[in-house]
Length: 326
Length: 161
Image 1 (cartoon, rainbow over the protein chains, first blue to last red):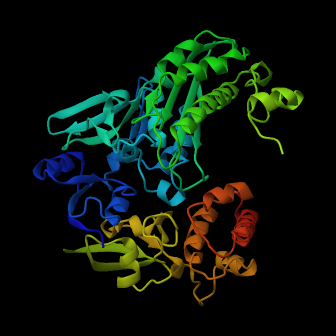
Image 2 (cartoon, rainbow over the protein chains, first blue to last red):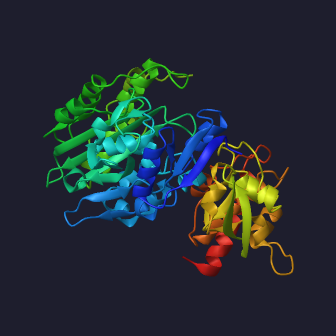
Image 3 (cartoon, rainbow over the protein chains, first blue to last red):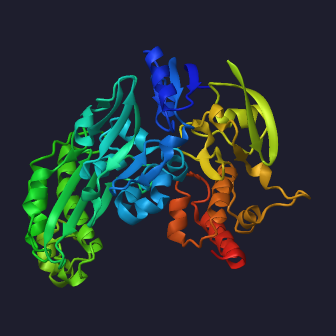
């Protein structure tokens, strides 16, 4: 039995807003995969729950006439991953959603909860940051939209007011059209894991698929909230995809924009190394996914296995890769 | 406070009074006697309590019974054939010796029902990911994966995609 004072299943969003307004201590519950676990640990014991679990309108994923995509806050991670619109236009969001917890968690946990928890480690949040998504809120003072980069105030803190319900996220056509991207979640395990670091790289190439027109770089757990690295993005503009310099530029600029901490999961130093390395790897994957001929995509200098630098010149790899040979 | 909910559990409509603080796990075990649903970690890590809600595998330990109102629920008890026969999924687990202590088995079987239900053919790596929400401390997973591969293969032969 969960230690809750009361439970109210809201009929629709307005009903949930009303219930929240009437009880200043009530909290929202959607998928429950975070809230109920916290309650089990004794955190927030005796709280009143307002549930938006079964509100259908919150689960919708669709595209409007302008081509903007809206993802309902109540859509589960597996809903997002398996949705045809997401698969076709913003597959990276589905890929990130597919790294959360395990299959049973993904069938219940929601994107809205992932973001509204205010956790820097939320896998879908860093992807939404890279897309400048708008967070759609509905409260007693009406509806409003907040750019996701302004939605977070600190760890576990967002600008969502007590009586506001997050209804979904809007991703503009200009922010996904012709972009390809890759998300890397680094953790000790491949499943049931909270990211030690999450890295999102997205690119938009010129028509001839030779130059980077626009780039996006965002991280989870590289600071108290997800973070967007706009200097790194700027540094890649107009560069050739076959120029091996792109990786260093991207990673170096990115490193100036992050603020990771040491935690029991990993030290600050390790996170900084991950930020540098994963931004390179994610960029390369994003370039490979962008439809450019693979032979035109530069290898990461002294990078991970598979890049020709290591295979052909083992001496270089030994100095650059930092690996200890037996 | 007790609330009346209606569910369809293993094909049967049930009406019962549940506490609104109750997890679906407790309701299924304590009110309906469906003890195939195991109580393990109670925080959605181990998968022992996995049941299907509207055909989707969920951890019933972190699912409120109130949410199950009006929904279809399935547990291992619902797999039994009309003469009490085991389902092909259960037989695959036995034939591949995928069961040791048996505590994780009902949950894994329910995930298998969801996986097999898609009619898709999955390779071993994909199956590993699909059962990653379950912990088994006995088998080392090899025989479980053998059973999963076998049943996915058998189903694919019959149904295709």
